Image 1: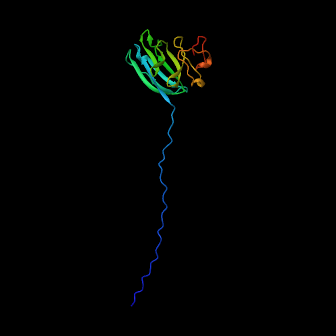
Image 2: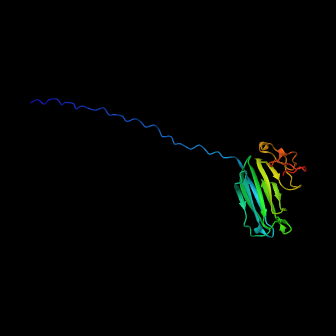
Image 3: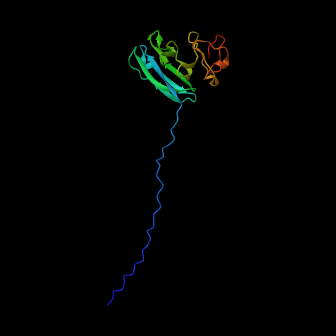
Length: 189
């Protein structure tokens, strides 16, 4: 007998699977923060260090940095904090007894510095003292004082933040002060 020729089996054309799209890793957008500059806060205690406390608050009253609980007399305590450009801050120092930190009961003092330049400093006050300031750039700090002659520095309104004002120049009119009040003696109140 003759063997019939083999019959071909139906073949199926292979189905190609779709090629997946390449996976591109996603990276979140960078979080942009305000530029800021390090300010050194130096507190030198008097003979009664436990009476001293201080804080720096933002315009809304939120505490940015603070210090208290000092126990050693006649000692300098330093703290660094980064402050954003163009925002108004208030440095407040308190003395529980009401005699400041200089000069009757020790030579205490406070000083805020941007780099090597002190822009707020003092020690003689009663129960408390407040100083407003704003960082304009890496060389310029705008400062308002609620103190007397000798600590008068230039101030500016929020819209003047970008302009450079020479430290030591007294205010000429209320708009030059962060507080909006310039005394007759040229001191921002």
